[in-house]
Image 1 (tube, rainbow, N blue to C red):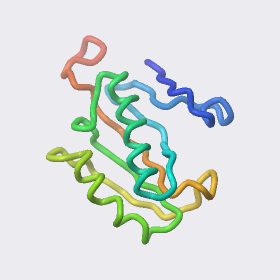
Image 2 (cartoon, rainbow, N blue to C red):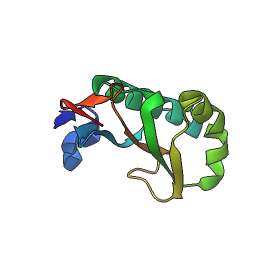
Image 3 (cartoon, one colour):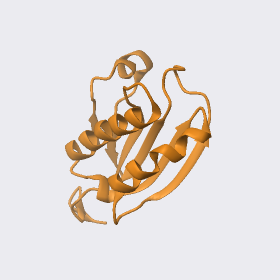
Image 4 (tube, helix red, strand yellow):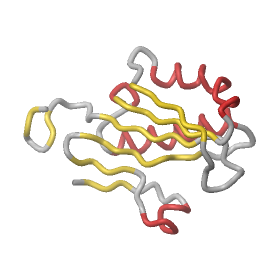
Length: 126
């Protein structure tokens, strides 16, 4: 098992890490980004997620599941072009949930599960 930290402020406060590689998967914690609106925050959250995936020997093309959490579902449509671009020809299974986030300034939180780029994980074929 490998734990990956991004050094985000909530990791130490809440007691979690950005990602965990275990059981043949890369589990990336719910991630918020910085910015003045949902679009900027979505782009920044994806940047943070991509960095964690890269450290885990994965990438956006290997994301198999994504969950989007927004306090206002009407803001989600503005993110669609960004998400389509991020996942390209390899769209994951997806869920969108309308819910409260840890701070009202956050407009979107994104959580993903991916597989490593290689078909070998911990010396076993997956």
